[in-house]
Length: 192
Image (cartoon, rainbow, N blue to C red; front, side, top):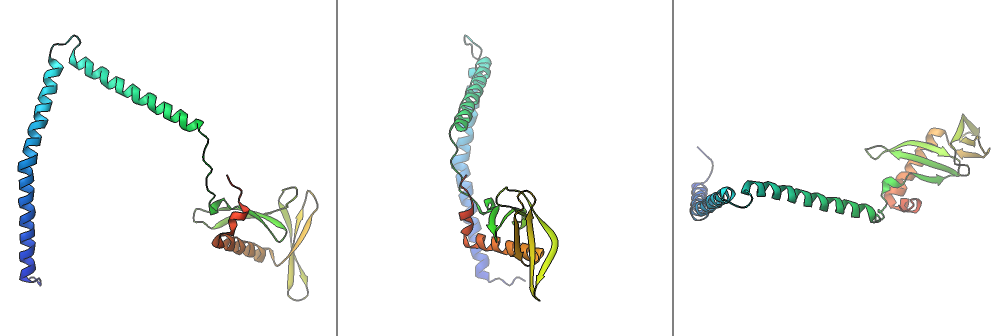
């Protein structure tokens, strides 16, 4: 036995009957005259194709289809040419366009993984725009202060930054995330 109320079953049957009656009424009033009209149209086209003309009807149809195809093709080519000749509207920069900034005297550049994570973080010298080398040695000043030296092979510029290379990379990544979260990245992106 079903747990539904008997009144619910009655309402469902009444609604179903009304929908069925409406569908049958629409089929009788619209479908049958619509099919008669479509059949008459097909017969008229058939008769016109095989009537006697100065040019056969089937040839006129083929030439019409080819003409329409050519016109559509010409219009599409014109639109394509016009769209290429118009100057492109400047695109609003996105946060993924933010790929470099200077932090602690070092120019940092990176890419983004498809997931949005920062990848390929690299340090550059701001002046000759070449990659900086780290000597791999962290220097200790006192018991807690470690520094990492970034050196430019081209200009000899040296920059000591407090922390290990790993901690500096993490700090830069956090700063990039902060700039993105606060919308301050827009200051570092040049308009396209």
